[in-house]
Image 1: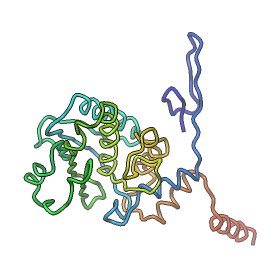
Image 2 (image 1 turned 90 degrees about the horizontal axis):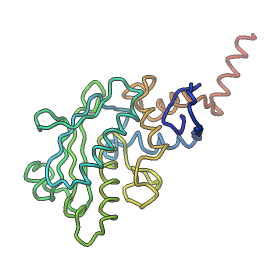
Image 3 (image 1 turned 90 degrees about the vertical axis):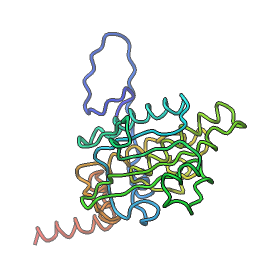
Image 4 (image 1 turned 45 degrees about the horizontal axis):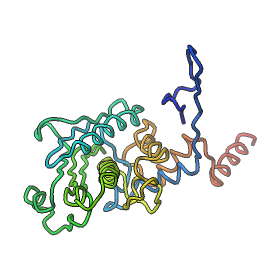
Length: 257
């Protein structure tokens, strides 16, 4: 899947000027297939029912932001542009005005958020670290999102600085993961697990990143359901299941006959 220096070239050309150590990074294809199914296609309430993806995401940050929050958001924006460098149409940028945005992220208390978006008046968002909604167009692109970041829980005075930083790091990535069209999973090692376990799912894992990259792969059409997406991904990864083997054998037999 790539190299420890960040390159995805294969083969890779390296100019040697001094001692250097570069490791190849591998990923298990079956685990990747499972993670794709775990976090990409949902039931409509928990993630979209078919593949949808962003093109250009312009995010406006609003509300009560600590310096650590701004830092973590900036780091993830940079990371996300790198993760999805396989999709030339995708980009995520932070903008300075709400009118220039299509994602409104508010770091505030629940009552203030509900004053702005009254449609969520009866949603218990105050119980969560964050909450996110997205909307898609007829072309299969997610083109609008709202993100509530619970400043009361995030900046709780009883939390140590380390805990606050971990909460901020996880919540930013988890909620923007949802805005990207991903869904919750029962796998605790994924950023899309609905609860944070320090040291286990603080950030996007390699499996999470690769699943997101395949969602944005040009060979993965939008509006693909779970069965179609699985077949496409199996083909991309070179995975042949039992039914695939049978079809291949039948094809060979037809040619022989």
